[in-house]
Length: 132
Length: 171
Image (cartoon, rainbow over all chains, first blue to last red; front, top):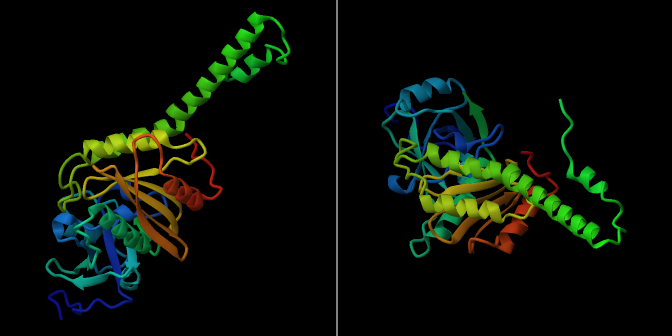
């Protein structure tokens, strides 16, 4: 059991929230793949919280007070795994997890980006957009 | 409100194109050129102009390092130039894309028909473009080279498949 009280393994039916810190990462109805692309400077991972659509504003205030959060993309862990990626709990902070397993191709970084983008698209095709 | 000026109406004043004088023919050709130029301007400064403005706006909002609080790179000047060149090279029949910033400093051009029907292109510092699509159960990714003037045919085909009969986004 983790300090937050959550189990160490993220279950397929758990909801994940990707906080949206760029207004360019969504339109009126849809989350764009850019919202999920991994950060090369963060070990090629995508940060998410094990949290559903309820009370997201409080989550954003608690966990990301340093940036403007416009809303969140909500999906199940199963959606991430259907993109041949995985979700690994990583606390602190509480409820935090990383999407890992992004394709890496050091010989061709453009091709690597294309492969990552495809995975991100699979996730966003199964996401719900919640705007604040 | 005043009636909008129409060059088509103005053109009608020059008859049915059967005039025989050299002056009439010259005028007819001149008006044709003006109409074509206006149509091009509407496209350039309307639809494509709006998309170019969006590129600049997104770049301005993401010009600082760590704009996401997680170490994102600022949007690169080269990516801005290439994205604008790409938009300007789009044929008129192609809807303009939505614009987004990416954590590595690239610009994403996205054609979104629905959340399960999307084509996304990354434009970064290279002349090679990463792109990927999802179309229902079909999905894939590829790389294509953009010379700054001509949109790679594979990408054009993908945009058309993604957007189907979607109308060109209004300015």
